[in-house]
Image (cartoon, rainbow, N blue to C red):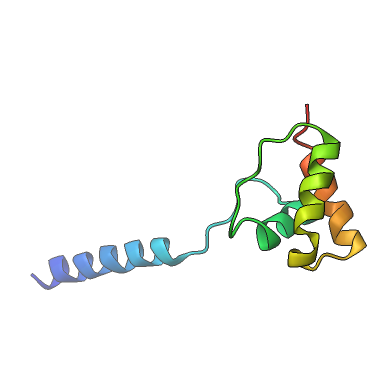
Length: 85
């Protein structure tokens, strides 16, 4: 009886521990993607824009609201450009 209870508690604690461990991404995340996640993902998914000039226009519309500096703007453009075909 005690052994069964001890086993049940051990299993429960193991499942809680597994559920509480931080989830790591399946791949490394670039600084550009980190910036996108911190500035954009709360409101948007990645827009379906293929041309660089479209990315630039999109970014220009959001630039003041996001309070981006030049380096951050360039990082986001690089990130967006990686999806262009």
